Length: 125
Image (cartoon, rainbow, N blue to C red; front, side):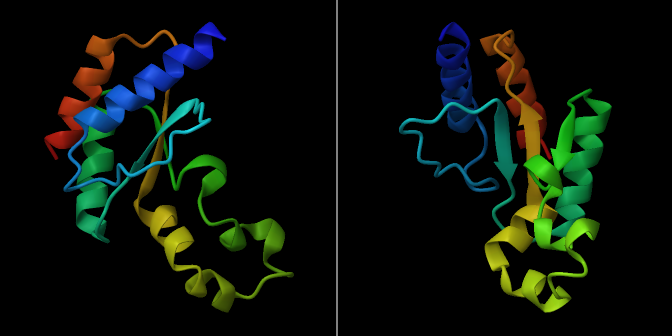
């Protein structure tokens, strides 16, 4: 229970500190407990995504691209014989998250200072 409370507070701080003009912050937090910070670039911009990944790598911020599970599951090899490539292209939001979404660990051990530093680096891109 303590970890859930801490993660929820971490996530709220993260959302309050990231630049809402650059990143999606409109998450429904009711009943939520997330072990990750979902960082989603608002506008499709491959160059921005590359700069963001570079900055996070240089800053020692671990992340997964495409959110949990590797992004758009219809693009994964285990489904290639079941789902056509056309399906992937029609899933507009899922495709956006596949290319412009990132998954950062929301550890209960993170301090407010840690989260502020992470957000400062992210916002600087």
